[in-house]
Image 1: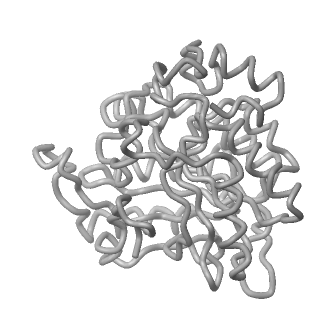
Image 2: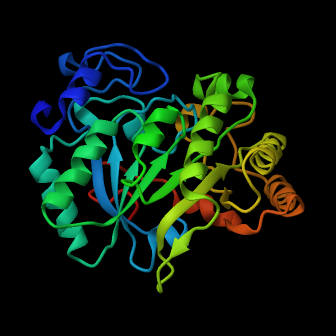
Length: 313
């Protein structure tokens, strides 16, 4: 366990875990018996250079992404299912904090300027420990919080001044779909509150350096799902009405069916061009001014293999 890297408040929190909206109340120091299945260790599945993010997130050379095991959602179509479904010994590296920092700083010393924390909602104290450890070693990279947005408002608020770029998903606005696909009917309301807190901190402007690398701000992601273009349009309308059409949006077409959905009536196939184009048209009609769309062939490039040192290469 990594008890020595946490503050007394964080130890108390992990001992009766109410970190995410599930509020399981389990003692993470006694094993992973909560919803996410993770204990109080670092729960890291992979640390690698990732060049497949949005251009301002990857920058010209890529980002050092820290992929955590486990998740506080159970998305039936998750592309990272190898590490998200179970937080077990088989899908996480047994790294201590110094080994973790050694790996990250080794990547930063190659000229990478940003560190992304992927699926961090259930390991927030661990994220803080890594950032603190990097600072103690004299490193202050751009920090990116890459989240599914099933976060408490107070968690996002506590990151003010610590996280440079928020990279949240906004998956659904329909509780029924959120329940069916991710096992969390309150996702739409919880995520919107978290997004509003991010917007309060960062506003609409995504500040970039002279190489186009994001240094501060917020970029919202949405994955268009097969058979659910209308849900995507509702997501876009909600973002326009509740937050701002000035925010940066990444509208993704990269959906690729995994073996877990091979018999699903909608999710067993790739996204049709007409479905994606209709979502793009809605985004444009609503007046979103800043964002990215994906090539239709993108689904071929986002099939990670977490048994490899770099899952995306």
